Image (tube, rainbow, N blue to C red):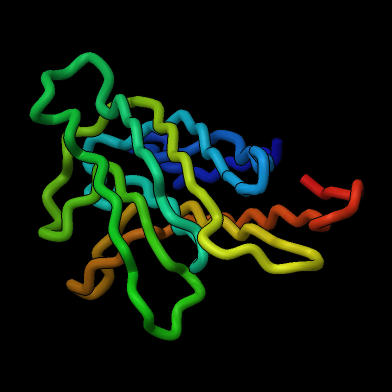
Length: 164
């Protein structure tokens, strides 16, 4: 497991994500699982986002955010395909993010994201994960993902050496 943690460090309205990434091979299929606890500040409209590299497909997404609420609010986790642009990211999962800059009332929850590698390459493989949190208006321009961390998981395909 490879741990990660990122926070807006705002004592009054903190948004944070903390968890682990697990990479494993099941038969001849490489999989990645992200398990995280999240907390979104009451005034935050940027929420938490997990960006995944091209070549990995989101198989399933389970989120409890926000804990202790009805099923309408619990549907605030969405997965997007980024497309074929210049970005190294192929997909993103957003939780508690509102593009109209309306705070989602905050809360806590957990998320489990399971991915599979679409095509396997030989040699050293890597899985970069970008986790971003928070939001702000700067000169009336909205910015989400005000704090972020990139986690790099590497392993050697076909050998015993793996770095997690």
